Amino acid sequence: MSIGSTVCGHPHPPVLLLPGKTPRFDGIILDLDGTLTRPTLDFAAIRREIGIGADDDLVERINILPSDRRIAAWAIVERHEEEARRRQVIQPGARELLEHCRLRGVRTAVVTRNTRRSVETFCARYEVSFDTVVTREFPFIKPHPGPIQYVLAQWKMTAERVLTVGDYIHDIASGRAAGTLTCHFRNPGCATGNIEADFSVKSMGELWELVFPDEACGDVDLSTHLGT
Ligand SMILES: [Mg+2]
Image (cartoon, protein in one colour):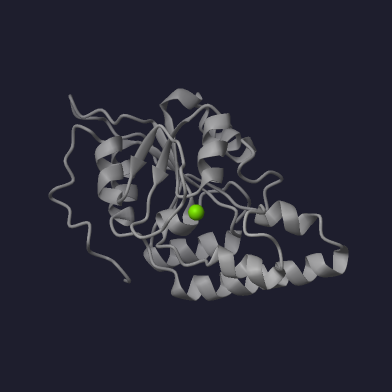
């Protein structure tokens, strides 16, 4: 899989929409950890173990460490990510939302600061696919707008009808800088501080209602597939 490619699936042709059932967005761009998955990465523990400040940007701070410390720090990050991959659990309702996007011709992307391998694990484990995938192997990472701009260019879409969704301030900053609308995904029980986005949801069910305002998700049991 190359950067930005479709994984575990194929590009999907648009589906004819039923009258009165127009999605609010032409595409949605989702973060992986803590958005498409339940929160599993303990970023505070990673920062403590590396010995950097609680408010430091993890990637930026690691990249300015001396070479030997930088290599050791990335090894710590990758060990935590490996453990997280083993415990990775999809957000309830995420698979149903992605499938409905495919049926309605709404493009989907995952943009993450995690690795390509973590996305591949997620796609294989939960049998989901995305039109576009951008991981930290890409030259720019969030909060830089580059990953989002790359997705828009791939889709040949302007930003106005695309929604960027994530649980962290970098997700919102990146989406906003690229001109998309933004949605903060608030995991119950997780304090994320004051993040100002255009929308805010606390479940995939609420995100469904935002993307498909004319189609209730009431017939879909969004509590299923947890841990499958
Ligand atoms: Mg996240």
